[in-house]
Image (cartoon, rainbow over all chains, first blue to last red):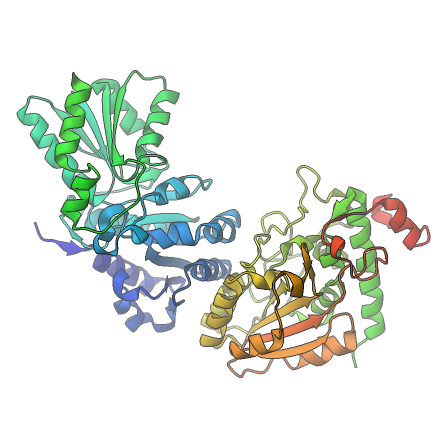
Length: 311
Length: 276
């Protein structure tokens, strides 16, 4: 399958939208090169707002632009979008009920050689606590394009957790997405695997193949949306399988898995649950393969977790 | 020549409304509210353009971010007097379900352009609003009032750099320089030192005035509209709790208990109509 850089898709999608809508603006904090948005700046000039290395200020400026009727997409590394600019996004954007789209790139271990300082293992946990915030992590170029468009159309704050490197295409170009909806990629009766983001989806699909060789048939759900959680799709599957393993490139505490567990408990469904995610640890440098292995995020780890739960 | 006497009267009435508003609750941010009464009076009577209380969100209006959001009661008094909402709302400050919370909330109060209260954030939003006005090529002017203690928040200086780098000459910052904050004098707590030089070195055009003197306010505001690519900062020398002798220029005025009785005494028994 052809690999496309996610940041190129991000920039192309925003450029297409900006062509038709002069309200669309982008903001960057000295990471235009990383976010891949230079082509947008070349074309739309002052509608690409360079804020310098000042993420908190960038989020405030985005809020002010929203007050003027613009639709701002502000991007930076996920660690800064969440940890650095949290109060600004919380108060100036969300509490003020404005229309700010915040994009956090390099989710979890994707920050590789930038290491622990740059790894957002807790961005979902922080963002989930913001009332009514829409949170999504697309898993491939097609879902990214669609979710960027959906966020642009949605009147309210959103957090887009975005991998910016090239990843495999999962969906066909005409696939339809909705905010708050997941996708079932594989249907199986024995276990439900809920995956978030491109990196984990690849591992999860590999794990499902490994399990199949042992006669364990897995349903694979690409969560896509963290908030709102697609409770119906996930709970319908767990009602059938009774076992769910949530796979995320994020701290287990505060992440997708905890959100799924609470939802299933609320629905009083009988289930066993396993969590694949970072277990109360800080980040560190390394290749993606090293980091996946170090934090037990590989297909093999998912496979082992399912086997434990199936005993 | 502007009608300074009329402004004096308006400010005097606004101060009275503000004091009764806080005293009716019994506690509030008296100091920083009373120090900006004349500034707000000037802004809403003389300075800000295209305001329409019956259409508070008119697109071409000048906008104000009261970044020191805890001074809400001062702004509420002025907005009520200008007809944005009934005067009777002033009796509801901070009561459950009120439209007038201690810190400004754009979703609750007609005429409040931005939600504030987490100090240091307002100037960034004002930068975005000013940038947006330039993008829209309209003549809006964006005003932002920050506190002197608030100036210690580093985000202000990020915004200061952005505003000058982007030539936001439609942005007018106003510092309420009353020189006191919660833990002591501003110089004791942090030390703003030469505030004028600081803003100048960040590329802003800086003015200084007596923030309680309308003639002085007029002089500086009239110089603030030059399209010279520079954001403007007016450092208003003010007195915390101005006009309330017991707390005037006192550190404890920041958030203080005040009673209706002492306000009545100050106004020789004269009570505002909306409280009856």
